[in-house]
Image 1 (cartoon, rainbow, N blue to C red):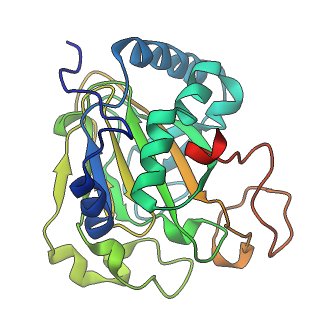
Image 2: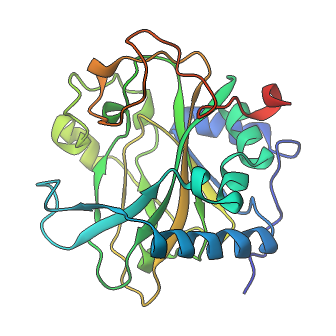
Length: 264
């Protein structure tokens, strides 16, 4: 069944949704892609997962994971697939990212993410900020569902307003319920997403996801967008990618294009 919601664009994005994102740290867009776009990107994502080596989030790399695989992913999706690059740079997605942040943004990275059917573990509560090698500025993730993601397939939950707290004191403190145990007692919002819908979330908002208990893989494209003025600060994160920058350099170049209205 196709996604019945009206497509949201930068032109019809309600002002109250922008404020909600800034207050709560996340926003659910019920539909951002057409059915044809979903089909093209789903096929491309399945092909990429089948053909390229993936990275795993499991107990071998994270002692917060007791068993199973949280998820696996193929990085650089936009570099390996025309359809997925179209999605990572899609004017609906990037235009909304620009409006939500109020900043000129760049695409930093995109990856096909799979939470395997019947085999996945829960995604532990965490925030994204301690991973990234920069300080200050604004960053966010657009997570576009390429299949229906009900609660049983491992949709995400968010702790509204946790993005407004001060950042954790050290790069290792991504496991936010350990760093800030009081957050575990604040209300959480669980957000099922139909195929072609998406969520945007701020790098500081606490979020998590359930296990995939269904017979279908949960497939999505996650794209990170950063403030166009972001500067490289390797001491600030534990991202191990070789970005080719010196400390203090602007994160810019062909791999990190400006998006949204500034790109046209």
